Structures are given as structure tokens and as C-alpha cells.
Image (tube, rainbow, N blue to C red; front, side, top):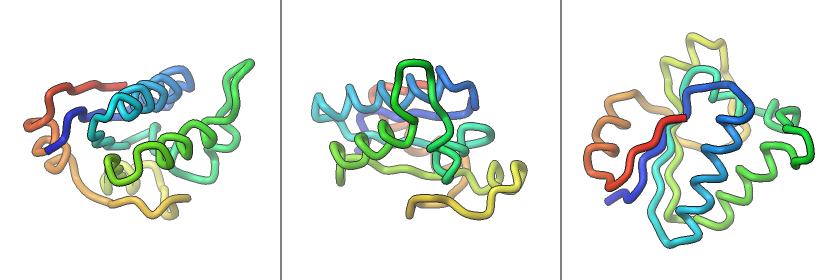
Length: 117
């Protein structure tokens, strides 16, 4: 069972950072996290994540990989198949699951907390 389901939609740098940093906070508290990346937020899962940087912060890649290391088995990430097609993304930088929004509907339905960034 998932404690927190997070849908990452926006390509806005602040929203991508906050979604991942929020997930780090929940993971640090011992929660099981499910993250569904779609549309412009899919860039966080590509090699482009090294170029996504806010002023006075490390690249998004640093925070995402920190989350993956910290959460381990308690983190599940899915990349939206339709979003990948729409955005022309063929290759991801991480071995994450590729699935549809119906999976997010299922996971978020059982989660205690659902967030959208």
C-alpha cells in the first residue's frame, strides 16, 4: 500500500524541485511513495535533469537521485507512456516503470495523501 501518491505534471523548475523535495521529506518520515511523471515533468527523468537548476541550488538530478537512494524499495516511479509519446521522449535516464494514468488512479485511490505538482 502506498502512503503518498504524487503526480508530477509541470515542467516549471520550482514545481519539479518542490515535488521531489516533498517526496524526500515523506521518505525521510518512513512513508511509501508513488510518483507518476507525465508531460513536461518527464524531463526530470531524462539526461536533461542535469540542466534543470534553480538559483543557489544543486541540479534537479542531485535531489532525484538523493530521493532514490534514501527511499530505496519504498519509492516507486512511473513514467507516463502517453506523456512520453506526446513530448517525444524515447529514452529515460533511469530504469523506471512505464505505465498509464490508470495506474496512478489505482495507486492514488489507496494512498493516504495525494499531491500534484
